[in-house]
Amino acid sequence: MKTVTTIRIYFEYGKKRKDVPFWKTLHESDFGTIVIKKAKAANLNQVLQFNVSKGYFDSKKINWGLSDVQHFKHPQIIEITDTLERIEHFLEVEKLFLADTSIYIIKNEMVLKS
Image 1: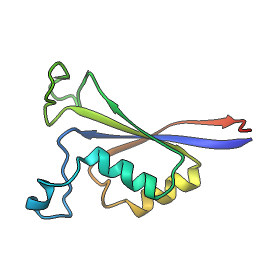
Image 2: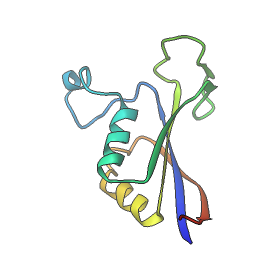
Image 3: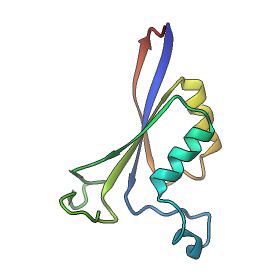
Image 4: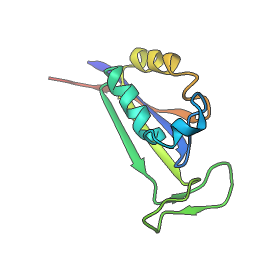
């Protein structure tokens, strides 16, 4: 049996990196894509991005996902599943990059893998 952990990283759709100059943020991938690429480079088992249909952060105004163009404050979720040790290592390495996000461990479970 193998213990796996799943974490969720919550962030706003329009989240920009703070470690690069503004002009570079205009031409780079969105925050979610960068997290997925970093997780892939770290060889984590599974990474998914969820597009939220509606929601809010910190009791602010509800954002509705009813149009083709998302509001920059619209909530987004990245879910990562792997062993606790590998996820903790990834979070430690990417601590500065993920500083303005909310990260929650949502479950631990035993899985039989053949």
